[in-house]
Image (cartoon, rainbow, N blue to C red):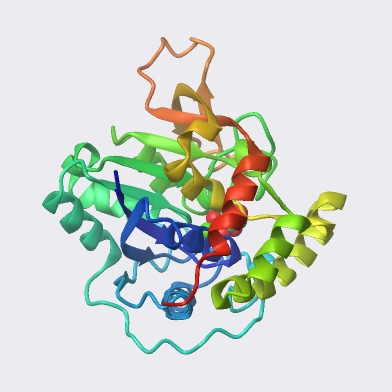
Length: 318
Ligand code: RIB
Ligand code: CA
């Protein structure tokens, strides 16, 4: 069965990799891309989304611009990881198609109302658009099939603070709204993202395939890889790469490759040092609230990495 998806995104090299995985997979029908600030400003993320579709020959997919800032806070970006242009300084083609009319959150509401319980949202950036959509239409929580979110860190360290992930810490209030909305949430956090390393061998397979989207991804990856060597200081990054957003799309495709635990999860919004932390209640100390989240806690990382390379190698511009 083909899964209908809307991808909310802040491209971003990881987003590029994850969206190309989705576009290369006939099991997913990408109905729209919605953009958000995050790794870079929303103006750049929108342009990058149009450019990456251009490169893949998929300008038929509409792109809707979304939030330019968090609900309460000021945005911060991850240009040290993704470069000033979001694609590691590599120039992407000028889009020939403009963004669609309308706003991301409104479009999420409209499309999920038109097809209740059929559309999955894959959120690859700060979740401001998703929270806005759930606030415009609180009933949306029961009309969206599920929300797969790249974010969170339960048993591992965060990547923006010792306890929080970049995407959820960017807009903790939005994340709180989303987690407590009643929508079915799948948390694809750093617990699994740090276990899906795309080895040099798999990157080489993409290179050998010679596809234009694959070549662009590899070029954009170099900046990110160097930035990670500096910031994470792990030798693995010298011979492979982690694309945090890829496991979120991989879960939509191959859920059998992941270990899942159900729990009630909420988001710290007031902590001076911990804003954006995912608090997963496994202890019973909160009176056993009903689980609201499927948390991915384990993954067959090698299999995901291999399948990712297989898919990207077939993504010819159409
Ligand atoms: O983890 C930092 C950022 O890189 C996040 O936005 C994630 O989604 C990736 O794009
Ligand atoms: Ca992202």
